[in-house]
Length: 199
Ligand SMILES: O=C(CO)[C@@H](O)[C@H](O)[C@H](O)[C@H](O)COP(=O)(O)O
Ligand SMILES: [Zn+2]
Image (cartoon, rainbow, N blue to C red; front, side, top):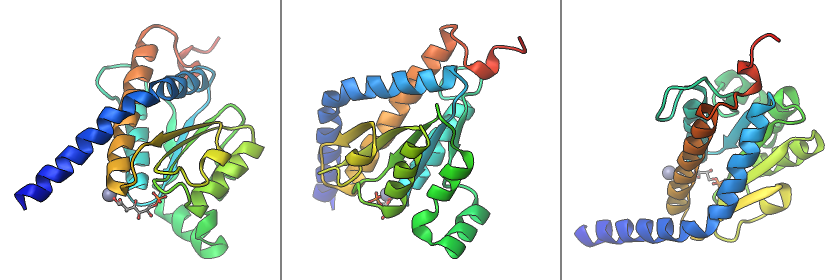
């Protein structure tokens, strides 16, 4: 058991060390997300299983706070409303569970993040395709080969590892880096549109 724990810890560290190659893409992600929020857009998140948990975790960091006091940032996880999730799945099928919400909620200028470790979850891919038709900027977080996700996004961050768990651990680190960068921008004085006041 001791060796298994040591192996997992070592595998985690190896993946995290390889993430520096994604620095330009993380920077671009933060620039696009900041531009979206500053101009009154919203950052949406979606994914299945552990990636659903990551989606609501990261939306909560933006609406609430990450590490510093600052105004709330507009962010919504499409994974949280059990009535929407069950009714859309029941009436239209599980592959439509995010697409229907994208059609109802997303507007041009918004940003949608799809998290899929395989890059092949049909409900995520379908929603990203629809979001593209609606003028939404699309970011994919995936790993391994990237599956089909990259073809549905303007920006795709591929964690260089094949293990679902290691990819998820890298995704939440990337998400926390994003929250930190957005929080710093929010505190630098360039307020999001919602905080600019009535005139
Ligand atoms: O958290 C885990 C595994 O660590 C699982 O719940 C995992 O997220 C689920 O199997 C997902 O359905 C996988 O979907 P995806 O990442 O391939 O899009
Ligand atoms: Zn997991």
